[in-house]
Amino acid sequence: AQSVAQPEDQVNVAEGNPLTVKCTYSVSGNPYLFWYVQYPNRGLQFLLKYITGDNLVKGSYGFEAEFNKSQTSFHLKKPSALVSDSALYFCAVTGGSYIPTFGRGTSLIVHP
Amino acid sequence: DAGVIQSPRHEVTEMGQEVTLRCKPISGHNSLFWYRQTMMRGLELLIYFNNNVPIDDSGMPEDRFSAKMPNASFSTLKIQPSEPRDSAVYFCASSDSGMPGELFFGEGSRLTVL
Image: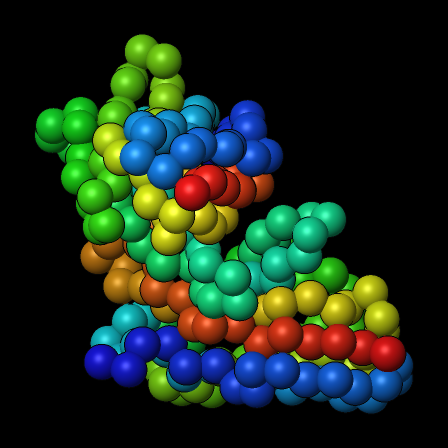
């Protein structure tokens, strides 16, 4: 079985400050990890993925995520938040099956 | 590529009516997913097709829901009869089986059942 936990329903950060959105996972075998973003009234959009290799993965819009195998975490980060980053963020995992398991989502609110 | 195309974007109907949602996946993708999103339950997988064959339909709520994929470029999700609790945003997503877990989502169909 595979599962994802996003422990925060909402994250608030001031514009220009660094942001972190947390994700932990459970999966059999090597994980394939993903972050997606959903803007209001839109579908989910792929942000970045970790399959293998460097634990720090860079993605779209200046986002990056750090894979930590010992803590089974894949936290999303950005050095300097923008108001336009405000959206719903989903972490997802698969152990190699074609069906990813999504977290409940974390609402990121960036204040001007 | 135009991405995953869903129609209609919005549907308002009355309880008991039949609803059909449509999806055109990205050309060349051989996996297709239907999801439902609500505030209460989040994102739920309804059904997964691979090479036009339903592989996992364990998320389909009940017999009122059915999904078909007659060919690689078209899928439908049908609700008959519809109920107010079916009100949600329904997403279609497609992927290339060479990259498990990397999905491309459509813009969604917002269904309101009165």
